[in-house]
Image (tube, rainbow, N blue to C red):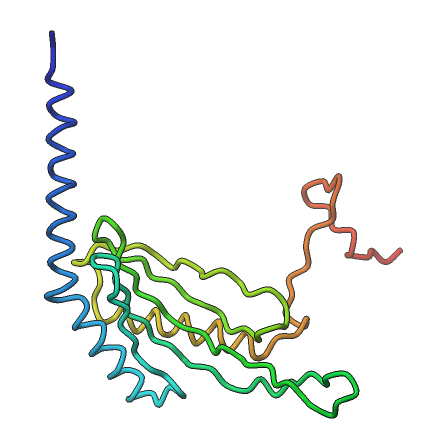
Length: 183
């Protein structure tokens, strides 16, 4: 019986388990403090409005560090039937989440702004999943930049920049039905 292939697979599995343990240790000793400090420093230096760094640590080894842009009045209110009362709709301004995964790796997600009671909220957008040794300060600055891009795009929404979809059906290569030839 040849068990060499099986032994190699088991050794790989043991290495993955060891990595998980090392990644979890790195989260507590290095990553979580670095994220907290960097997010606060960048927010302060750039004067990011209403930002707060939140630590979610109620589940051990599934913790999160969040750059939360808070909540505010959306400026929209609903008139309640014939009572003269208005109900203000609250806007969640978006957030950047660093979520520790079950295996110690770190998932980076963006949460778009939303107005409660107005449309369906978008699910968080996963930017990437990193090993702790891959997460460096320049990545965090890039992640904050991605957050600023999505919140700016959300706030400035219109249809001026919507990309046109190609027509459905036959469209031969090189044929552009919108290009008109002069005869």
